Image (cartoon, rainbow over all chains, first blue to last red; front, side, top):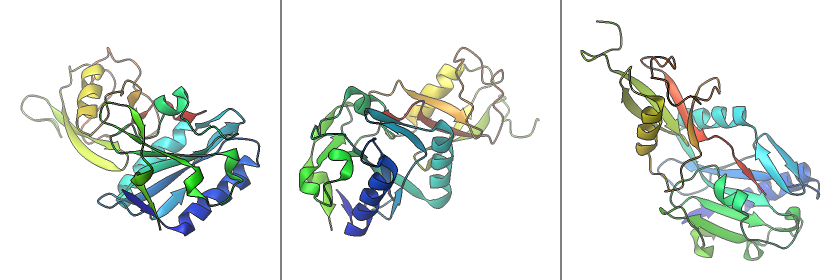
Length: 143
Length: 90
């Protein structure tokens, strides 16, 4: 179970509105110390975005993983927006996740994040060792 | 003996994945397919892992998996990044 403070939820929503401008998808990553599950930082990657999806810059990804190693951090969750009310992962969401490891968390926020800080309206999915995504609202504790 | 090589000519590289660092012993004549597979095995990764690839610190992907480690230019102490070749959503 990862624990995230309202402050970090708010940072993600602010970035969704500033970057996505209510018309394109956006993604953030939530970081924690390597031996912890409390979110300590929100990162907004360099990415392209459209109404139908987003793609993270490869050079940014390389530097990101190296920077995490330098700082003793890891990504514990990704949180991204969808254009409408649909919360299910697309096959692209399934396949092209940042960290394809068991217990990595993926959160989908509807309506480009315009609905405010209401995690009960978001979907929380967790990746299994078998490579399947399963809904698990209890995987995130909202502080 | 050449610096960084053991008696069998093997050398160590460092693999970084999501902030975790692991050392990997590499044979110069080992294929990059084998190096990549063994790098993945150093970490806890879900079964769907065919999109993971190795990159150098300059973001050059090792795409020719039939090359040997020596042909690919790997050297002792090199830092490699293990990551998804594409990260996107839709």
